[in-house]
Amino acid sequence: MDLQNIKDKVDILKVYNELTTEIDLKGSGMKVKVNCFYPDHQNEDNSCVLDRNEGVFYCLECKRVGGVVDMIQAICGVEEEAAMRWISENYNLK
Ligand SMILES: [Zn+2]
Image: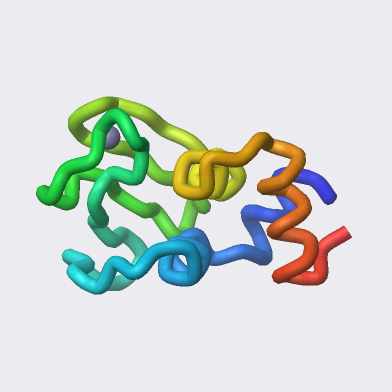
């Protein structure tokens, strides 16, 4: 399982929806703004942009950027290995 494969097959917004109970999403299409999911930057102002085309997120306030794996780590508080396992189990990626 490589990162390009994840980018091609996994929709970052779908993963976000599966891991959170967030319903107040702003925007639509390929770029959607959500609340930042880093524990030390939790806010209610939808400062984090999920770019579905690129499979990345970037927070406009705390300036963190990353991919789906980084997002799972931040939301679930797990290590990279566990995040990768979550993806492979849920998306049948090897
Ligand atoms: Zn942030």
